[in-house]
Length: 309
Image (cartoon, helix red, strand yellow):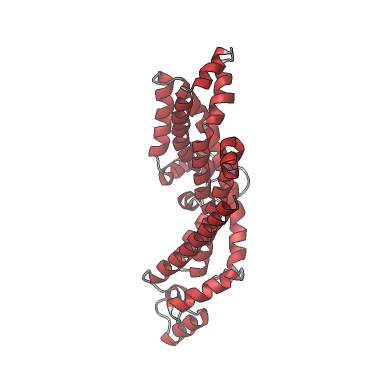
């Protein structure tokens, strides 16, 4: 177990280091200059060079990367090139909004996907199966950048029930959560259906039915828990995506989260902010994957026994 933990930790550190280096190099190699964005293209050459030197952008890329990693090891993510605000404080200010939206979106997807997937599995080949899978196909087919504006036109502009954009209470979270949740629910419902169909053909399901248990009780308390491993894998991956910031949805609804902060930083070529956001995304994936492994062991005792051996 200790060896597995050390191996996983070392690979995680390597992945995060690779992501930091790759993003750093790609951002700096993309054509354009943040100095031009900050001062304008008509600024004097002397002013541009002075600002570039003050920001450390006149040094070689390799030296900038080494300096950045050294500061990162000390817990310093740097300062924004534009606002001169600490990147850490900017991320901490935006991350709660993304976390809140991610959890609510995940809840919405589960509330939609589990009933659809279970109904489709229990009525394989029948009308209910086709209806449920049709709904899931519709959810996959409509992209977020189309579904979001459609919901705004209907529920905000036409009916006036919900805010158009921004973060001003629970009502402002409904539309972006539905936009994200429906897309995830479409994929999740298909996964639930396929895994349930595999489990329902097992011998222990027939044994439980032979003992007189109702079909619904067998499905919920026997089949569904044993079908959860691939479902948890999908939920963990999707939660990592949501925590990383649903860029399109946050931009459409002007949701003040990590996704919108990343887009704004890329537009302004604010290197430290972009690097800090990507680092947060990477760490979010790592934490979610580790938590998923713990859930695996809690649901399936065979995994815990395998770790002990």
